[in-house]
Amino acid sequence: MTDDSGQVLLWNAARELTARLLVCEAALRPRGSIQQMQHNEFAWRVRLLGMCLDSALRAATAHEYPAALALLRTAVEHRVFDRLLFLASRHVQVIEGVSDEVWERWQTQRPEFLLEWERLSKDRVRAVWRGARVVDEKGQFLHYLSVYYKWWKEYNPLIAPDRDAAKLASGHPESPTARSAYARTQRDMWRDVLAWKNLKESLLLNELASETEVLQLDVHHRFLSAYAHPFTEDITDGLYGRNPRGGWPAEDHYAGELVLLYVCTFAIDELRDFERMSQNEPRVDLADWDPVRHEIASAETQIAYFWPPGRPPFSYDRAKEANQRVFDALAAQHDAGAPHAIPPTPRPGTMADDEIRYYPDPLHRLVQLHAGFSELTTGVSWSSPWPRADARYR
Image (cartoon, rainbow, N blue to C red; front, side, top):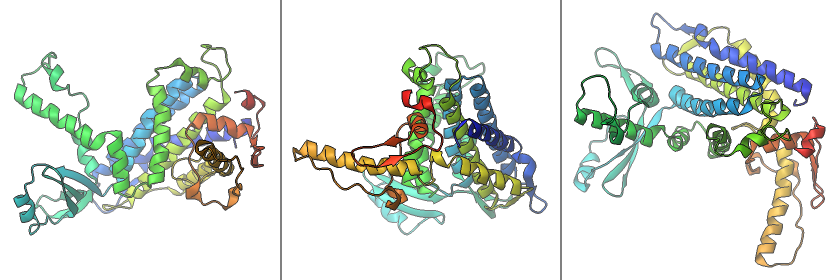
């Protein structure tokens, strides 16, 4: 629901889910006599996301939507990283300097925890490993842990690059050689495993997202990045609609609704991944989790029209796809210099979910969801269940 009464329901769902994120640690119930510290640390990550989403809600309450969306840009990367931190079971390593002789010798010395490897050009080998191994004090294997846990602990984003280090005073004795080596390690860790493109590749490697879902995540990452890097004030003006140019902050139904949809989406996915994590070894029970599942299911129903990443398309998007296919065919005829002939229009309800293309602009689509449309060329129309008079003039 996205009319004014539905927005109240979205607000309630966003607040409920955010509150759940803040107290996940209290739900942990260790199995046996040993409490695994990583479970608490994962709950802290969940709480940190909850703090970010709560701040976005407070900014939206003050009609400071650009700030809210900038916070949500942080949240989308937090979400993807947490999915890998909680659930990843494999990772890629590119090993350099492997001669033909060494590669030949390795074929008879395959490491136990290697899943697959392949020879690359320029004396490189691409290896896929199981997650980090956790052993006891005697060196006996206990369980696997996502390698992102190791990188999470080791990465230091505040380390200056070599070119700047000599101009900065660290406040303690340090070896320039050691400092330089450490800076390179941090740079390489970011470049090779923690940058956005690497996180997406790791989602695919670990089968934690499909290629379609990764594309969808990219759409939202790109959209939210416009508010983290506000290089044009048109972005802000567009967020406030037809309000006087520069007359911010001002209440806007669509911008506020979009913030709520993002908060609900990120909170739902974080809670689900936290529960999935609890079912991996070493397992941990979550006390009183049934009400959480109920709130997640209820909120999922409310945000279905947003078509969040990893979900099925909405009826609006089916109608849009039917029209788009006709438009694409007409454009191809024009480019080829062929006679103009309107092709048959596919029926929106008969197309498979994976044939429906995703939308490029979340805000524009949300406004159109309130307007509906009727396309004369194809005869395909879609009536909004939540019409707003201002949507057609946005």
